[in-house]
Length: 94
Image 1 (cartoon, rainbow, N blue to C red):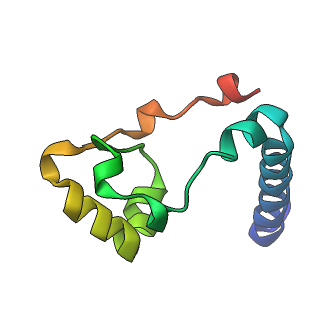
Image 2 (image 1 turned 180 degrees about the vertical axis):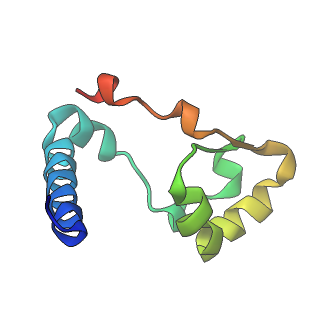
Protein backbone atom coordinates (compact mmCIF):
# COMPACT_ATOMS: atom_id res chain seq x y z
CA UNK A 1 0.00 0.00 0.00
CA UNK A 2 1.51 3.38 -0.97
CA UNK A 3 2.06 5.96 1.71
CA UNK A 4 -0.45 8.85 1.91
CA UNK A 5 2.18 11.27 0.58
CA UNK A 6 2.68 9.20 -2.56
CA UNK A 7 -1.09 8.94 -3.12
CA UNK A 8 -1.47 12.70 -2.87
CA UNK A 9 1.42 13.26 -5.28
CA UNK A 10 -0.06 10.84 -7.83
CA UNK A 11 -3.48 12.51 -7.50
CA UNK A 12 -1.87 15.94 -7.92
CA UNK A 13 -0.02 14.85 -11.07
CA UNK A 14 -3.17 13.35 -12.61
CA UNK A 15 -5.18 16.47 -11.73
CA UNK A 16 -2.49 18.71 -13.22
CA UNK A 17 -2.45 16.64 -16.43
CA UNK A 18 -6.24 16.89 -16.75
CA UNK A 19 -6.14 20.63 -16.11
CA UNK A 20 -3.48 21.12 -18.79
CA UNK A 21 -5.54 19.01 -21.22
CA UNK A 22 -8.59 21.14 -20.41
CA UNK A 23 -6.71 24.39 -21.09
CA UNK A 24 -5.37 23.04 -24.39
CA UNK A 25 -8.87 22.20 -25.67
CA UNK A 26 -9.76 24.45 -28.64
CA UNK A 27 -13.33 25.06 -27.45
CA UNK A 28 -12.09 26.07 -24.01
CA UNK A 29 -9.46 28.36 -25.52
CA UNK A 30 -12.10 29.96 -27.72
CA UNK A 31 -14.41 30.60 -24.77
CA UNK A 32 -11.67 31.80 -22.43
CA UNK A 33 -10.49 34.49 -24.83
CA UNK A 34 -13.57 36.49 -23.79
CA UNK A 35 -13.05 35.96 -20.07
CA UNK A 36 -12.31 38.97 -17.89
CA UNK A 37 -10.21 39.32 -14.79
CA UNK A 38 -12.59 39.80 -11.88
CA UNK A 39 -11.22 43.28 -11.16
CA UNK A 40 -12.21 44.30 -14.73
CA UNK A 41 -15.91 43.43 -14.20
CA UNK A 42 -18.09 46.41 -13.33
CA UNK A 43 -21.39 46.17 -11.46
CA UNK A 44 -23.29 48.00 -14.21
CA UNK A 45 -22.02 45.40 -16.73
CA UNK A 46 -24.05 42.61 -15.12
CA UNK A 47 -27.59 41.96 -13.97
CA UNK A 48 -26.60 39.41 -11.35
CA UNK A 49 -23.73 37.38 -9.93
CA UNK A 50 -23.98 33.59 -9.86
CA UNK A 51 -21.51 31.65 -7.72
CA UNK A 52 -21.32 28.02 -8.71
CA UNK A 53 -20.70 25.57 -5.86
CA UNK A 54 -17.31 24.40 -4.77
CA UNK A 55 -14.40 25.77 -2.83
CA UNK A 56 -13.77 28.89 -4.95
CA UNK A 57 -16.55 31.02 -3.49
CA UNK A 58 -15.86 29.77 0.03
CA UNK A 59 -12.08 30.02 0.10
CA UNK A 60 -10.78 32.13 -2.76
CA UNK A 61 -13.53 34.62 -3.47
CA UNK A 62 -14.58 35.22 0.14
CA UNK A 63 -11.36 37.16 0.76
CA UNK A 64 -10.87 38.58 -2.75
CA UNK A 65 -11.12 42.39 -2.60
CA UNK A 66 -12.32 42.72 -6.21
CA UNK A 67 -15.08 40.18 -5.54
CA UNK A 68 -16.13 41.88 -2.32
CA UNK A 69 -16.33 45.24 -4.10
CA UNK A 70 -18.32 43.82 -7.02
CA UNK A 71 -20.74 41.92 -4.76
CA UNK A 72 -21.27 45.04 -2.65
CA UNK A 73 -22.02 47.15 -5.73
CA UNK A 74 -24.40 44.59 -7.28
CA UNK A 75 -26.26 44.11 -4.01
CA UNK A 76 -27.72 41.10 -2.25
CA UNK A 77 -30.90 40.98 -4.36
CA UNK A 78 -28.93 39.93 -7.44
CA UNK A 79 -26.49 37.41 -5.97
CA UNK A 80 -27.22 33.72 -6.45
CA UNK A 81 -25.32 30.62 -5.44
CA UNK A 82 -25.28 27.06 -6.67
CA UNK A 83 -24.36 23.93 -4.81
CA UNK A 84 -21.95 21.11 -5.46
CA UNK A 85 -24.85 19.43 -7.23
CA UNK A 86 -24.47 21.91 -10.11
CA UNK A 87 -20.95 20.70 -10.88
CA UNK A 88 -20.50 18.07 -13.61
CA UNK A 89 -20.09 14.46 -12.51
CA UNK A 90 -17.06 12.38 -13.40
CA UNK A 91 -19.15 10.59 -16.05
CA UNK A 92 -19.84 13.88 -17.83
CA UNK A 93 -16.16 14.80 -17.76
CA UNK A 94 -14.98 11.54 -19.35
